[in-house]
Amino acid sequence: MKTIIFYRSSYRGNTLKIAESMKDALSAELVSIDSNPSIDLSDYDLIGFGSAINFAAHDIRLQRFVLGQNLKGKNVFVFSTRCRPFLGAYHKPLKKIIERKGGIITGEFSCRGFDRTGPWVLMDGYNKSKPNERDRFKARLFAEKLRWKLHPLALIYKDPVTGYSEGVPIRRKNSDIVTGNKVVFLNTSTCINCGKCIKVCPMHIFTQKDTVLPIDEKNCIQCRLCADNCPTSSIYIHESFLNGLRIALRESFSDKLQNSYNAEDNQH
Image (tube, rainbow, N blue to C red):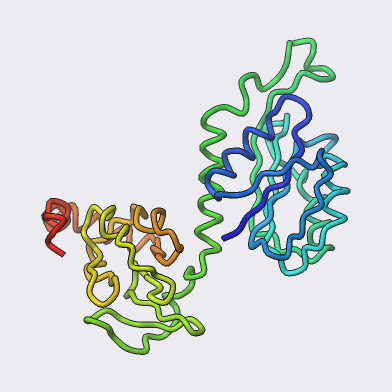
């Protein structure tokens, strides 16, 4: 998923810290609007805009920058750093601009940032040490969830089964062939058979025959190591409460998961 993040961080670098955490999670390009960038956004799948909150809205320069972009049909997220403990309606002005430009808002994030302006000078600043490591972790987690939400296979589990390969159900997404039952889904059309999923999976879910297949998905613990290490984003793990409950029950009342974990790598 090709992603770009535009930001303005002009005071204490608060917003830049958050933008950098999101950049790492999304493998995104990070661009300051202070450089007056002129970038064709047509090739990007996800676009982020963020700044500090000034006078109950995003930075006016960022708002003007967004006004000049063509966002029709684009997935867009917004983020900010703010002084007050609650977000309120501070994102509304920028979100209205994005919607006016045809963008689809897929998420928003905000956290507190250090402020030493106005009345806060009297107490030598407010929100000292913010954003901290926990805030940066939350920003990264937000970005990871956003990436997962927009994965091309996010809704594949709802599609009908059209056949089977080695006992594994097959679904079709346009011209792609996707294998998987309820938890682990693999797009065999984009898979390059690199074997990374086989090497990193602690539960030995995958087997490589003519192609890689998620043979033992019942043992999946939803760690997502396979998906995170897939170079072509061909793997999707359908996370749900029921899947989590299934894992918890199997771990509590049997040793099957432990046995799968302890199995030799060359078993498959």
